[in-house]
Amino acid sequence: MKLVDLRSDTVTKPTPGMREAMARAEVGDDVFGEDPTVNKLQEVVAELLGKEAALFVPSGTMSNQIAIKCHTQPGDEVILEADSHSFHYEGGGPAMLSGVQLHPIPGVRGVISAAQVAGAVRPGDHHYPRSRLVCIENTHNRAGGTVFPLQTIREIREVADRCGLRMHLDGARLWNAAVASGISEREFAAPFDSVSVCLSKGLGAPIGSLIVGSREFIELAHRYRKVFGGGMRQVGIIAAAGLYALAHHRERLADDHRRARRLAEALAAMPGAAVDLASVQTNMAFVDVSASGLSAAEVVAKVREQGVLCLALGPSVIRLVTHLDVDDAGVDQAIAAFQAVLKERRG
Image 1 (cartoon, rainbow, N blue to C red):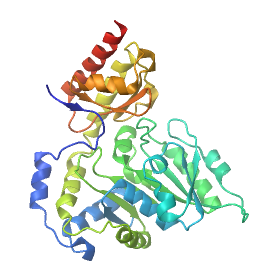
Image 2: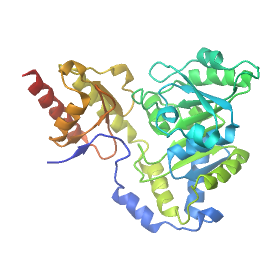
Image 3: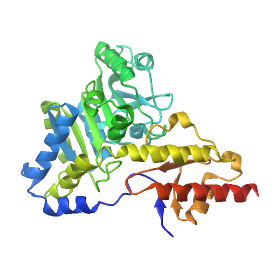
Image 4: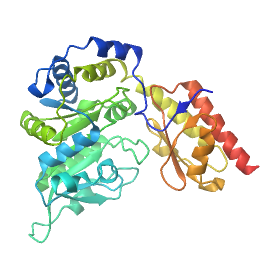
């Protein structure tokens, strides 16, 4: 039985072409700034996102935490959406590493408004923390891979400028947002002081993220990468995978989006399953199985027996993510597995 892994788009294996690029990579000591492949990757990503410079780091969490550290001082406050990755999944890093507190705002499918941001800014009074940074996630993971509208981002930028706030974009899946919306990564990045992007999610590289911004910002980010333990040596071997992914795997993200939509629509039609189809905008589908009489964990265990892996996000919600290693046959297998499990329960 073929295994279909829909837990995350981080589970992909390097393609043969990517492995060849990695094997041929010219390398040097990146801590000394002497790895030519890393330097090329940084130049390419900075150019793609329209910023002056970029820095290669091991993970998206590190890139977000470096940005928060660069933009804030201890005791500052960071405004962000309540289900954002930096709030839920980065181990309390803002408090531990930067000494800041977070001000989460409830959004709609991961989107917060300029009015909400303006309302969250603290008064200029010493009793309050200093509002300093706004973080936006695009696409938004816990909202189902939704795209944050560019016009709303621009409106939030206007608030930030009025209130003296900086802005950081957690663009781990920005590549998906660009393909889904037809808006370039550069346009999405323009309103932000810093942007992080991931290579090991939708693009299928085995490791790595980048953070971009002004030259002055990246110089400071370089220092914090060292402090956080992110300095690497002959890292061109994995930077080559990122360059290959950028050249070969961006446009094909549309296939992942198409497959996620087909999967979501099939699940939505099954008794005992509910899907918010308006949230299925990129490569994720979230299904609520509470009406089936089974818990999410029970459904996950049962479909696993049929060769389909997925992730329970709570008592009743399951996340499924399409990616480079899931083809149309894999989607068919997943649909059949869920149909069998839910039909068995109804029977």
